[in-house]
Image (cartoon, rainbow, N blue to C red; front, side):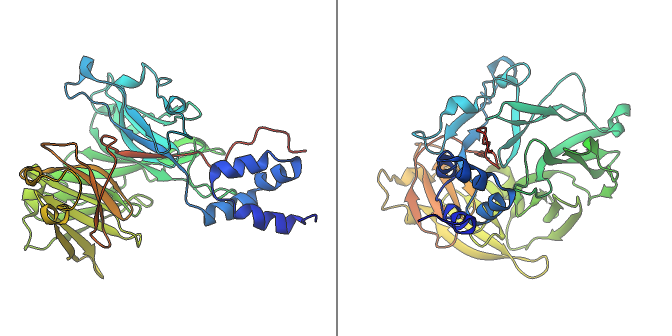
Length: 377
């Protein structure tokens, strides 16, 4: 029985994966036209999680300069994803001279220190398609009065196929330090307007950063902790606005920044969580109404992991390394005696063995929409 286009669209929307969708598009021209339709792609993206190709970790050998090695890509499914297609050897000067600053969708934000003292060489690249765009410094850097503190990838504007970020539609939010105060700038690339710094370049002043500790990214914002005053600073990645709050005096937050793990990630509910890990004690803090943060869960890792294969009490005599943090879970491994990776579910605080793949810092998705090169007519 022949299906009309509406029924065919409903069937294709239920295809289980990005790869299977491409295979379905290869069946015939009619199916290919259906899959290539922007409305269909937008609906498919809303129903399915983005396909994760794998994770990158920085390859800094710890000595800088000639001791540096290229970032390493580990595929999420080695049987289906060829790591060679995600090499960064196309970057100027080779991959070994670059550090990864951030990832979002299928893009990486990378930098290396060049000849300029204030603004490094910065590129946004898409490893699978081997494309890159250099991010030139804003005009304010011409007199050397500004220094780049942090930079992050931000979604562009949702396109017709439901994609929010790609090589022709992305933004980079930069945090700049200038003459005793902190400001932000937004770099935008658009297929229509080209490369530009926003008209509001560095006009958003932030609370004084002082000796700040970056906690990472969650829920579209970036978090920083200012030592000595229990101050949490939040940068909204889309608007560039800063907000600040004072954390509870019941925790020694400064101690967390010295030698222990202190970071943010998303919970299963999509809301940000602050995580601290002190030797064998892990705490999860949740944001209440307003700006207040409260203790949500605590787990004693040395007890929770006793039933896991290979357990040794000495694993918790030293701090834990954070191998991975993602929505609803983190993966830790002992600093000494490892690798012995285990995951913690942030909702249930249950632990489970995890595969060791090194420090999985940066997630990389497959590009969206998928490239369909065959004839659609």
